[in-house]
Image (tube, rainbow, N blue to C red; front, side):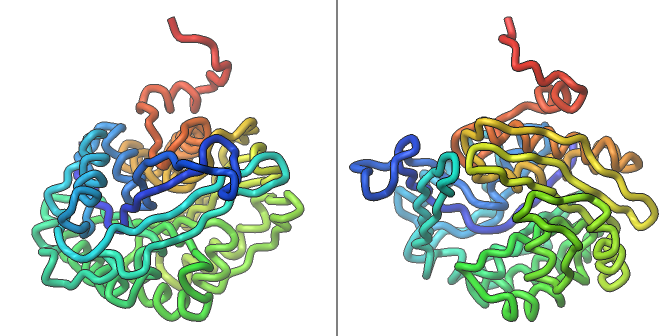
Length: 341
């Protein structure tokens, strides 16, 4: 299988139990996660040699984050140690018409303050087939944005395919700042992933779609996909198309374009949602596996990615803990949920 490298921030997640509000909670459930870390876990679950690149503090909480990755087969050889803290985020899980809420406590984290000397990107990219990052990483600090650029340059020197999940986070930066950083980084990207908000706020491309009204017809995305490919030279442009009926009921599908053909996936009706955090990351992890496994069949790759993400919505925590075989079963049409004996 392939060597897949991802780079970003892993954080301590503190969740209010069940569907309790923060104000009701006397304790928090503890897990670890973060965009690119979640993708690395997915890649490892599918049998790839997954490596995660970050920096964590030397204390026990930093080690707990590393252990969480090791537990699921992610290689941690390139994780630097040092700095003052591990980023934290608090999650209040919504239900029905009440949305989930996230509160960040991540300023000054180890990876946000990391320097180029903490990483040998040429060694990291040697022998790799794929490098993945997201827009969250350059958003956390100017230093992290520079690390992203250096990693992308090394990936290109080593002939590595680069994917980016645009992942705009309004609590981390403005659209103006995002575009000033993200647009120049697109020159390194082969596979661009993002939903309608990401494409508009990170790159300035707005689809003809009423997302809030639940209207996500694929035709509304054709024009911006073609425009994005023309401007940035991507090999693939991909978007998830989420219909958010409530916090616990979503429609889910995706669209991919390779410069010649568009392919729209089958539609999943996901209800009840157990945990939607990491849903986009599970899609990215599934897409990476799909394009590595079926490089000439973008439709099959997309169906795997959409099925992987649909399943992630049933699993508590950030990580998608579904096997390749389980995802393939759903992608093949087995959505019965019958007990496996």
